Length: 321
Image 1 (cartoon, rainbow, N blue to C red):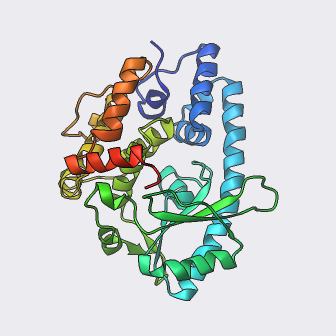
Image 2: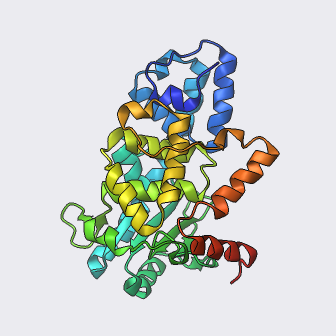
Image 3: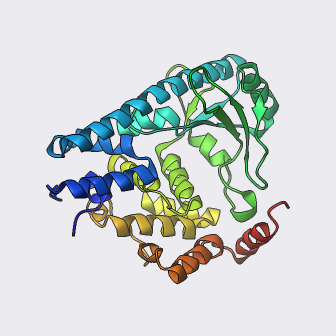
């Protein structure tokens, strides 16, 4: 059986097939999840890209260059916003974005990003909105019920797709968790000489990335790659992770997400063993019945508290309330 993309990227013991048809099929998987840049970077860093067919290398390189160009524009816009927050004395934490690509994938063009996600204090929301509006982000997206951000967009020259700034005051619905965003602020570190621009701790970044993958039910390879990349580059304290998740009522979500990741790439246990892996139905999602069961499990049963499950069911039945 031919190796999966995750095995090709992260298991150096897996041999590379010689069949051109395999690489066309791999490109189909890459296209579905838009992970060309990640694939190009990781294979190149691992010295495996040159062992693949020329057409495969060329397609990935072209996509990587497009991502790099886009990320240069977004980084420039991000820096403008951060500088204005710094001048205004407003605490701010960039979430993911181009900095995530540079620090954890090793290159600005290694991971595509489309929005600028920023964490701010709830008390600073009005001032934050004034800043992003002053920079041309005028069009406000309609808020999503029960979510925890406000979004503002503008069209950049040469781009047909508006760039959106999301101002977050939390990372989880308070109605379905006992998470306190103040914990992120307490462990955040100042960036370089900045007084107000902060960097999220590695621990909370991993926590957030796992919850982000869960929220999207791990429906794309990009969520797998983000999590695996962090496991490969950071020394995550799983004991603390599960203890904090128990306290926050997110333990089931964390265990479910990491179990799916470890099941798809078992060699991760050689890097960092995950102590609480559980069986998953991820591989059976192509079956209509299993897909339905998986949806029910993800949507309503991956909460630590029955109350939180009931709240989520109510929100699902009454999305406008």
